[in-house]
Length: 268
Image 1: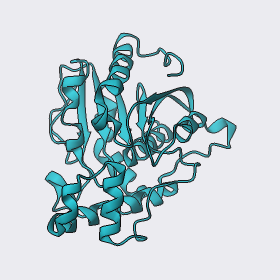
Image 2: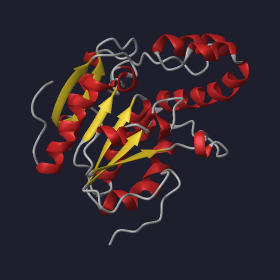
Image 3: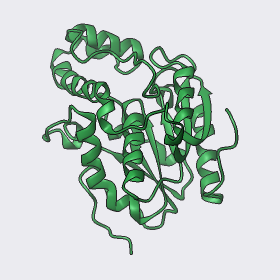
């Protein structure tokens, strides 16, 4: 029987009338609000559930994670009961893609209910060299300028030191999470038996300056069923060029609702 109490990383309890829960994991420096517009874009039977890491937005008073293993372990404790209740899928964007995949891999190791599908956007496969900026290489102004160049920050922030003093520490801690992704228990892609029994769909922005389509295609080494889709836009293509992205994601979710056991329908 489905319970109704929300856990702290979710802004609300899941809808009981939904046929599929889509847990959404945000990018470095971001928050759950990245997904505010998604429910209107996706099938009504899909319950979009943004996952909020601590230290930002509604959870700004809570200490932030700096280690991928600790973040994934904590999310597993909080979300585990929800993931065992009803059919679910996950979408992760940038850092969120790594978190979603690591959480899924951990659940499979522990015998938990697997997702119907895993959707990953704008994050290189773990064995591919990362092009994300280092947490400590740049001073605040340099890091803010990089964010503007990547499309993750409005230029108006460059003149607002008060805003940057709030935003940049969050981003730096999230970049530390990305730099420690090997501590999150990801499988070894060189182990032929390590491919997870998952259906994975990867999305790449055609003009992403951080993550090339080939880096997204490399996720195919981690799952038995894989599909790769390149969409218009840069690193934040769901926000920059939403229509082409949702034109692919929405039908994929509709196929899950119609036939949960079906594999992705070929390369994009």
